[in-house]
Structure formats: structure tokens, C-alpha cells
Length: 299
Image (tube, rainbow, N blue to C red):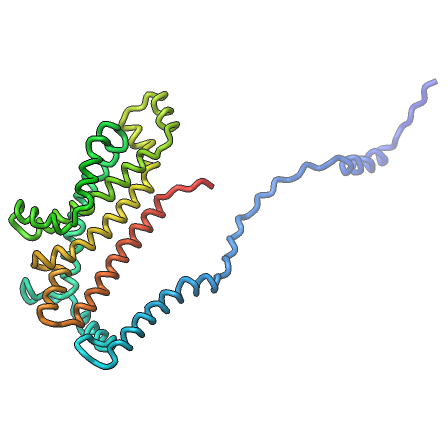
């Protein structure tokens, strides 16, 4: 005997919502709105540790300077030097003839010479460093010459420049070129020699051309070494141009210092020392920022 159970339509309708409710619901995809990054609070201790020591060091220098000159003498006091600097930088770009120009023009002329000599050194030194580091024969051939010429004082090359070029300006550029080329050559060559051999083995397996090996493998790996050489070279170039201009004359910060010494204007000499240091520091910091920009780190 078969028994059947029938449900009324009302009961069926009333059970459907329960059955639907009993089924597990699929999670809905919720698109989260990008939340703005919380701004990190300023670390005042780190801030003051970066700012306060340099200020204290400069204050110590000025204080010692003031104590040593408080009794008078030929050496000017900090106050006298500051007053002279205010007058000097009130019109830094005046021009009253080829031998009487403001300190601004002298700095720009020196930077122009540095840029030309340094640029020529980069055009020659960086490719030469790649060649020395890449090929053993070239390394053995050129390394003794670099070891012989690198320790020579930069100013020893100045008479050679005057003899060859018969003019002070190209002789100064030549001196900057010859003194700033060595750090770029040496650092670039060392960077190429420290490239892992596995990279070069992969390039050999892939049958890459020498140009692709240099541009795709060597250059990214050598870039930190290259930038270090560039930073050392520009510091050396700025150091040498002052001495070269003292000997060659004309327009430039080195000639300006020597001219002020001939006029016994010690205040302007001290100002020039600070200016030379600030410009050199600015050049070095600029290249350090470039080096940080192009440095690669594995996260």
C-alpha cells in the first residue's frame, strides 16, 4: 500500500523562503575604495639630529674664529667678513672690464671650464674603462700607463697645456680633463670586472652581440661604480680649476682669489673660500642624488 502526502499550495509557498534561506549565499564581490595613506608622524628626534649638529659645528667654527681675532690684527673678524660679503653679493654680476667682474661671473666662468673639461673626460674615460674591464689584453696594456700617470700632480700638466694650446683657457680645460679622467676610468673598469661571470655566460649562451652585452648586462651592473667615479672626478675638477686659474689668470674664481690677494683684501679671500666650498658641496650633493636615483636594490 502506497501512501502519498500532499501539501497545500500555501504550505509549499511558505516552505520556499525557508529552503532559499537554508542555502548558503555566495559572497558578494566588494570593491574596496582606495584609502589614502596615513601620513607618518614627523620624527623630531631624527630631524634635529640631522639639522642641529651642522649648525653647532658652524657656530663652533665662527666662535673660534671670533676668539682668535678679537684682539685685532691683519686677519678680519667674522663680523667684518660678513659685512664685506653683504656688499659683495649685493651686485655679484657687475662687469667693468675683463679684469674687473663680479664674483658671480667668476663662478660661472669657472663652472664652464669645469663642465667642458669634465665632459671631455667622461666621453673618453667611461668607454675606456669599459674596454679595460672587458678585455684582458687592453687591461694589461693600459694599466701600467694609468699607474704611472695617475699620481702626477694636476698642475704639472698645466705647462704642457700652455705649450700645446698657446692659450690659458684651453690649457685650464686640458688640466681639468687630465686630472678628472682617472677616477672614471678606474671605477668603471673595476665595476666591469666585478660583474658576475654567470651574467656573461648567459649572454654567451644567448649569442648576444657585444653591444647588447654592454647595454643590457654590463651598464646596469656597472652604473653604481660609474657614478662613484663621476662624483670623485667632479670634486677633483673643481679643486684643480681654482689652482689652475691662479696660474693662468683671466676670469674665474681662482684668478679672483689671487687678484684679491694682490690687493691685500683678505676679507674677500675668506669669502671666496666659503663660496668655493659651497659650490663644491652642491656639485657633490647633486651627483649623490643622481646616484641614489639610479641605484637599484632588491626588495
